Amino acid sequence: MRTPLVLGNWKMHGSQAFARALAEAVRARAEAFPGVELGVCPPYVMLPIVAKALDGSRVALGAQNVSEFGEGAYTGEISAGMLKDLGCTHVLVGHFERRQIFAESPVQVVQKLVAAHTAGLVPVLCVGETLAERQAGTTSRVIEAQLQPLLGHPEAAALLVGAIIAYEPVWAIGTGETASPAQAQAVHQDIRKLVAGRAPEAARSLRILYGGSVKPGNATELFAMPDIDGGLIGGAALKAEDFCAIAEAAASKRS
Ligand code: 13P
Image (tube, rainbow, N blue to C red):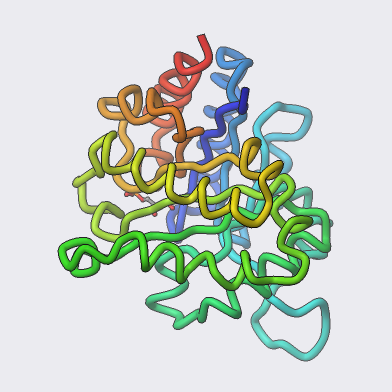
């Protein structure tokens, strides 16, 4: 049995006061969902304030990005060790917005995953196809290509232990359009099979999150799918009430 995980990606939103209030509101509600792991990924500069607000709670702290480098003259970058030092346990790597807007390559994404793993952080590797790719019927090929640098890595089996994959169809991110439970399940099942080809043990325990316009109203049916182990939540994570309603939907998966 895989413990469901609901992770909020706050993206580039808010202020210190907003971050503190949101973290405190999530914390206050989190005790109601003991069977679900919860976490939030605020912007870098808000990590200390959110770490303080969550201190001693069961809500995990994650970052939205990490440098592939350990230390040195990399102006503007943040290392995995720095994130760990701030109290982070999780970090997103290869979010679609990083790949598209900031031109992160598949190889660079895996370097970031390795850096996170080496520092003892749980990497959350994001993959997903565009609308054009889905319409062209190439979804599984695209996902496979995005996973290939990881699956082809000499240390793949070790890197996959404890790692998390998030399937986020690009056409569903921030659009209000969600993959149907069947569409999402098909891709999640594919991902698990691909991972099983390389690391069968890790594949069984691998948590695969769905992301892309998850809301309180659609979370239950998505999370009911056998290979959907929780969600990576964007817009709805900015409201504690909605985020926690999604956590409640994940709790119902367990019971
Ligand atoms: P939305 O939930 O706003 O569609 O964002 C999804 C996402 O990109 C989470 O990483």
